[in-house]
Image (cartoon, rainbow, N blue to C red; front, side, top):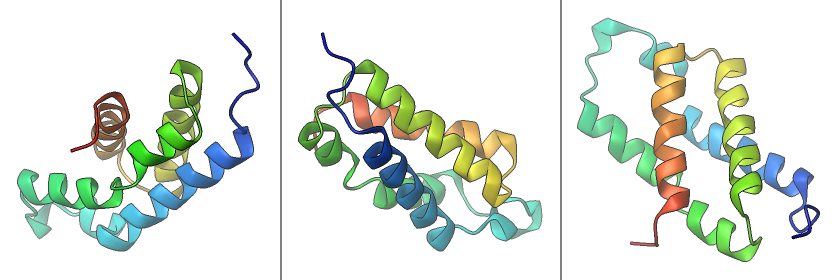
Length: 105
């Protein structure tokens, strides 16, 4: 198996775009403020909307295990850079991993 099948720069770029999509829909100021009271269901909806093109990207770029791991790690670091709390970063990254692992809806 060749490790150079996917383009790391394309994967990084897509991960950054996913993180920016999350920031637009659910800014860190709201996510990190417990007084905002956003429900878990609403957060899941927001993430589902942000990740809408993730499976298509995976298929188009033939991301295997290492490509998906690269995408998830870059996404995680981007969310940290934007200032999200670790609990949300882990939750969002888990949701992205789930989206990449399953078949399109």
